[in-house]
Length: 516
Image 1 (cartoon, rainbow, N blue to C red):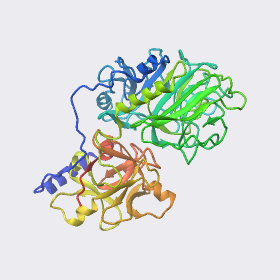
Image 2 (image 1 turned 30 degrees about the vertical axis):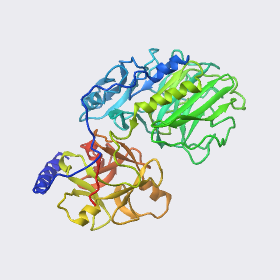
Image 3 (image 1 turned 180 degrees about the horizontal axis):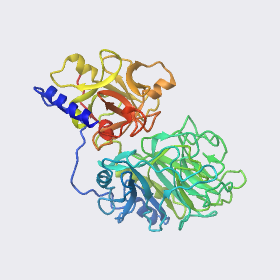
Image 4 (image 1 turned 45 degrees about the horizontal axis):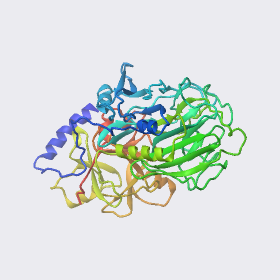
């Protein structure tokens, strides 16, 4: 790969002679100013409402206005050294640059997610449980990049088999005691297996019966309860059932919710519980259910045990997937007014998949420029000779055909409207899609597999520039150029294009003004 970059650099310098400056929009702008989050954090709001946080986890920001400690710990593969990642300032955003520096030229996993409440309820690698062996996998530290108010951070990317836990907690609700929980998830990353959870679980890692859990579930499992539509849904994992309301099956009031950043809330007290949710980027939260506990035996009263889980079920069921950014657990049943204020704080934090608007509004016409050092004059385009997708140098002196071939119309994702699809601007009806991991242009045949292959979810650029585009049906793979051909690629794997060399650069694209 180094040899490829050296050759590419020579080639690009030769091709660039006599060209003019490429104009683009949506370029990430860095700032050297110290970043501050809101003076008041979510846990300050809960405390003022009489329901203080007893666990507060986030890899993206401080959840108290005065918090100035570590958010999480990473471990790098090159020497197994670890580093704590803190905030830029008290109450501020994560110091992602510290992680990037520590993990440069190697891979890192998240080993600890620290509890900001001061109670020591940090999350570490989950051990084996009744449903599955362990210890569980740890999250790739760079798999879920994001931005908050323009500042880069990383979420916790949970692939199947990944999980975190704490079985020895302090202050977490037990029995029928009241508690509240919220989490911010990636609403476009979910699964139908059991169980992507965050919240209260058994302390022995086994299924100990109905009502021994109270955790937020996010996904589209239909084995137990369901909401309306096809999912994903916010539900409560109460053990031996995912509940969308009082009924054990369909509760139509619990809607499909798949905002790119989704606020999910579950709270419970004696014979009363609720599900709430909304868009973490704008607006308020809505109540999807509020009422009595399920009528099935074992849920009233509850038998909560007070462990904390992330990404797994209470018995270590670990077959699902999702992405977590932040979440808390409270002592006491929060009022709707308190939760509404927390939602306003979340929106103000400014979660975004890019450092700017990015131009990825459906209907916009754009071009996508590579960010790898070898290829910063190259754009993603379809090849006139066939239907393959490649990168090549485009400038103001390029032919009209070349400019048109590198221009795309942003469409609502064919398989997920929260994501995007790219339609060729000069061959209407032809979409960018992957087949055997390589990218082509092809006409929409109306099948589900085509829709999935042609849908990509924008994320913050993996190298801190622009945006990266995650395959909706292969969520560990992103659009990548490799030897001038374009693929979906993982950061490491058996295919040549999965090489870890330059992966972050090769998978990052600047959304630019259209050439045609």
